[in-house]
Image (cartoon, rainbow, N blue to C red; front, side, top):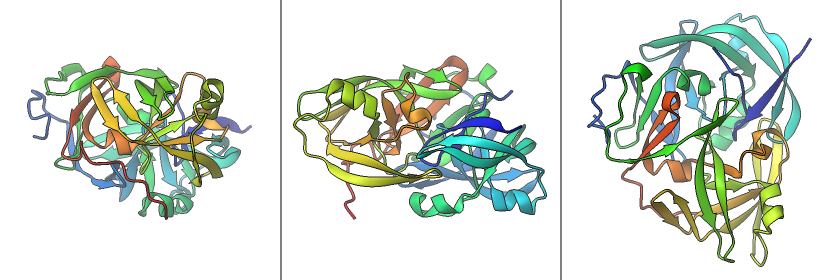
Length: 316
């Protein structure tokens, strides 16, 4: 029997419910500290191991509930795969393999979890670099994670002993199937706006805000606006989006002017989750040093050195 799985995020990752920087004021000792590469506005790539093999380059994707490994590497490591069907961006029926138990290592941290195996090569040109896998909510459900963009260091903390004492602002997180959402507001030049929960997509490189089609249609958000048409790509294939220059994005007291706002046409995966108004990507989030504390349902944001950079739209 095939498993039925849901995917999310620009790279379409699998959902499972599985068992001193800008924060120099944190009086906590990390259990792991890992250097990372920041790509396309803030996507985080870092070294990880699988069953002691590697290291491999992994992407942090809060839009995915589990971990993902390239199918070719899984085959090379001799991993036994179970067949599954995934719902992904642009497609509702993608065949994948499931590795029920694997040991994933991130720095000094090792944990056992489920791995999904499918080809990653089609996504690499879109994200701008080669990589071998991703990690999502499985590790974030067990550790507090800090992304220090000023030093390009990722830190993991034990939730039981963690206390945030940094200088940023804190926001409540809500969750659907282990995927985090934060409340924010997007205003448009025609005077219309949308306020609601947006999926936090750390794999959304080059993306500021996506607004779901049903929200745009319901509130007639594009009325009177000129739009550009473009294509986006995920593991499920091609999707269409409409692009406008917004008026502002507000995340609590933080406000950004003239963001790029994309209206998605896709109908598969978490982009159409009724609890969500859309997605917020790294063109917004990468302007902060970020601490994810899933155990307390809190997101901590501190402006980093790119906080005031303009939003640039690449028309190539």
